[in-house]
Length: 139
Figure 1: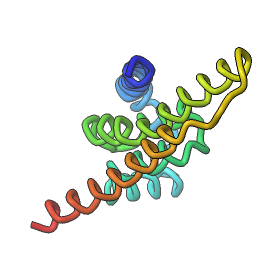
Figure 2: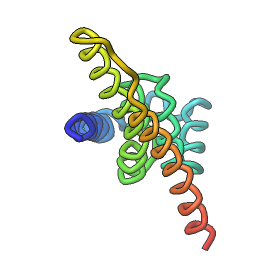
Figure 3: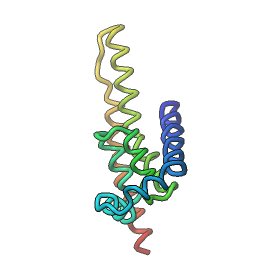
Figure 4: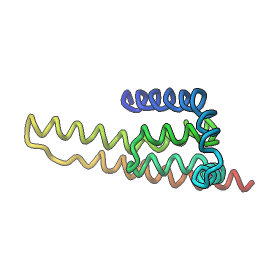
């Protein structure tokens, strides 16, 4: 929980700084480029789910995502909620890996199935949340 809260505070501070301090200059310099237009179109169409997906796959570094989304037209609430949902499995994995490394240095480490089950439950929750969100949008 502490790791997730600290992560959320850091990404919100970075996002807001980029959004309100550097976005105007970025738009003046690069706003008319095709890549920027494609990003904005994608964010307008998928918003929250693009954030969730990019957070969960954990390939692109978090700081790059914070800067990139700060330059797009995504709403602050979509960015926050998408990051909050997407970071749950990532933080659980990081905490598990840190504990596993620490335990392995102390004693023989045995894999704890609870963390794997929690990860699958989080992924199931994401898919369920996506379906509910889609139905709400349709109505």
